[in-house]
Length: 280
Image 1 (spheres, one colour):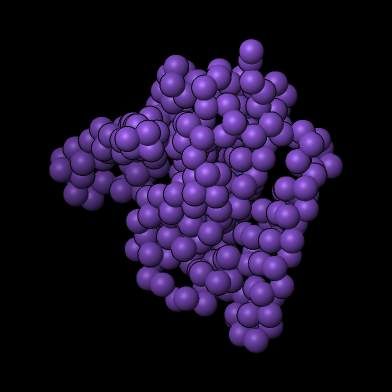
Image 2 (cartoon, one colour):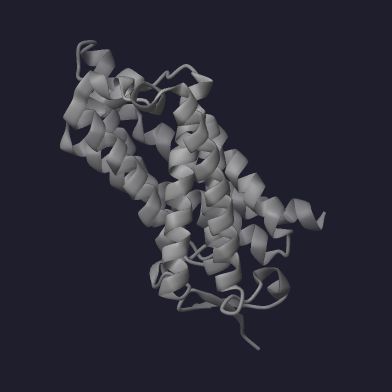
């Protein structure tokens, strides 16, 4: 029963995320019903932008989450923060190559291409979408579970799985899932959403920028096509192993500055420069 109750607030956070998306999509449905030739990319950009902002604001101020303090600092020393960022970047490269080589169907390719061509689409995909997702999947799901004393690795993997599946698009699910593990480790060791949010924005904005610059050709710019299959595979293995090594280094670097949140189950948690400390 203890563990069932632990999932109540993470479940609520995810339901809020879904419900806001559904409500925000009503204008899109109305626009297409009135005019079947309406610009779907534009209205989808509006939907994602509005739903991301509303969801982020709601979870930031709701007492069970109250995540405003999670953006006050990086939560660790700057040397460790740099190691964490490098780990994430290596993971982005390695898992991206892995996803490319799986050759999964991309249901959202045409829509994303259209959204990348307008400012609202860029803001929705590249900026506010990542902010919202970090607030939901790291702050709204991971934080309550960690406060209840669940095993950190279970929490990280559960959050990463939900994060991956929530994308729905086959071409995005494995990439998002693996990246969710990396983001989860960084969040767990810092108690801050700053690093994961910045890296998430960097990844999405770079993708949108490529689509803007190269258009339809962006989808053909794979590591395999540029480097050859063998070289791309070798790069994938090297970057993923390097990502794991950097995460381990990051873990060691943050060990002396992070108080294990799982020990604080019966206490009030506060954030102080990203470190989680028990109030007596």
